[in-house]
Every structure is written in structure tokens, then in C-alpha cells.
Image (tube, rainbow, N blue to C red; front, side, top):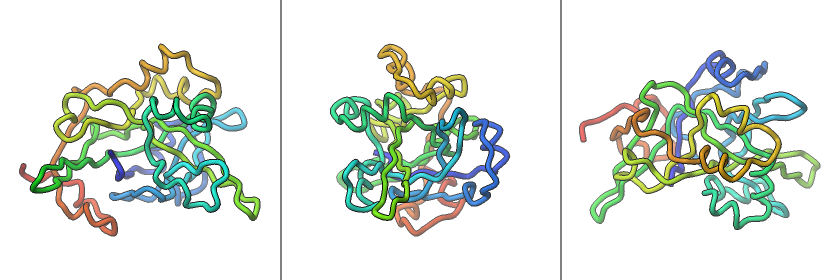
Length: 224
């Protein structure tokens, strides 16, 4: 389970890496302890081009009574998607990318739960694969919401937890964002665990446990 992540990038970095453009500077506010239910920057394909918009993190199901319904749908495995008709439809034609600097996981034992911060070894932005849907409120407003896809953890992350977000290489962005179904072999290759040789795992302060904390100090490594 990865129910917190970090977004810390400039507007120029995001636009250059993901090929998007917007005048909305508020989409790029840094946050070091993002939780489900938050509004997050997401890249998706609409009207023939890549767009960036703020989605609700936690996919709102059809027939939901209110916008915060579905907050528990912040992540989902491909196996779980196959068991959900409405999310399977999203996987076929409503895929998105969630830019992140890194994510947190907690190693839990009988005595304690220890937080770790996981990032790319290059310290660059990662692109987490997601699916999204559009829910219409009673007032007629369209609310975009998303779930992160997860895979089995690679060998580096397995000591901390058995799942990790699906991370995509830049050369696969177009393929993932295309509004058409993916063949099973292609899908399997895209959602496979990201190479451990390209990632770093660091123990961090337990201050991250408090969801109200939000500062760069949260991702600073501390001795194990």
C-alpha cells in the first residue's frame, strides 16, 4: 500500500517531461505528504492532445452520492481492475499519468511501523500509471478522479512491502495515454515492476505519519 506520495517539480520540468502546457500555476504547488482525497496534477489525453488537470485522488464510482465517495479507490492492481466492470472500461480508454517525485511505504513489524521514501535513483520525476473516470455532480459539474495502478514490488522494495506503483518509462507515455485498448502482452509488459537498479529506498522521519506535516524535511534520509 502506498497511500502517500510527493510532488515537487517546477512548471517547466513537468511541461518539458510530459509535453503539456497550461497557464495554471497552482497545478504545480509542491507537496511532500499527499494523501488520498487530495486534488493532484494528472496528465491525460483529451480532444486530440495531452492535457494536465487536477484530479481527485481516489476514483469516484458511477452512481456515487458525493464527490468524496471512492476515496478508498486511490490504488488498484490490474487483477482488481479485471474484476470491476467500470474500472475495466477506464483501463481500456481512460488511462493517465501521475507525476511524482517519490512515494512512501511503511515497513510494519510487531513492534513498530517504519516509514521509507522511495524515489528514482536519478532523483527525476517519475510517471505513475493510472486510470481515471469523470463523475457528474448534482450541479452538473464534471469531477475527474483517478486511481494509481500497482504491481508486485521489485526486489529492492519487497523488504518494505509487496506492492508498488506502476512506473512508466518516457518512451511508453504515448502508448499508455492512447485512448484505445492495449493488448494483454503489451499491458503485462507496461505494468511489470520497475527495475530496482533505477530506484532508491531511504528510511525517513516518523513525522510523515502526521498527515498535516508537509515540508522537504520529510523526505530527508535518516540512519537506519
